[in-house]
Amino acid sequence: MPWVAVPYADEARRSRLNRLYGIQGIPTLIVLDSKGDVITRQGRVEVLNDIECREFPWHPKPVLELTDSNAVQLNEGPCLVLFVDSEDDGESEAAKQLIQPIAEKIIAKYKAKEEEAPLLFFVAGEDDMTDSLRDYTNLPEAAPLLTILDMSARAKYVMDVEEITPEIVEAFVSDFLADKLKPEPI
Image (cartoon, rainbow, N blue to C red; front, side, top):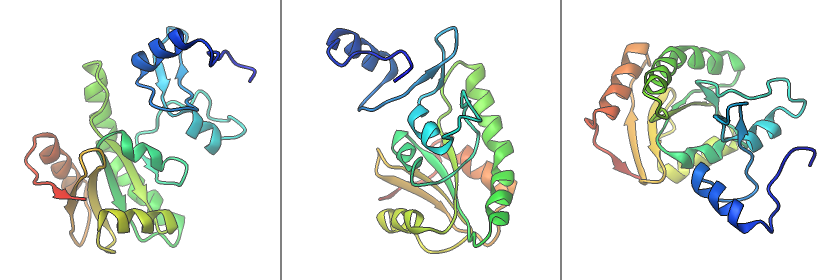
């Protein structure tokens, strides 16, 4: 490894870093800026998805396309997932554009309070991983399907409507953040 790393034998330093950054397993790659502030806790996923490091230092994107390599982030807390019928990339891109302003607004609001955003935002197309996620969470095959999945709480919130609009997404997120939605068990 050409970068600075904590030797595995240095248990005291590893323990301090685990507490400081909430590390729960290895390997973990957290990217920091020059002031020591976290840029991303998903460095490992970013390296896997950007082997040539073109997007380094991997500032978080407001909306991610759900993939095998970033699905682990579903376990980090509540995640808004918009399932789309994406035989082509056009529908996934349109879905990202639909929820991106809402994601950016939420992220900016919490960043101003120096807090982490309470939701991650994903668009999920049609693939084996998405099928497995739908099966695991007992979600219908409908598309589009707007959900908030909270794996750690084993809860899901589902908005099954004919058409997803920015107003519907914003109201769904607002109701979730205000604890107005009734969770269904996963």
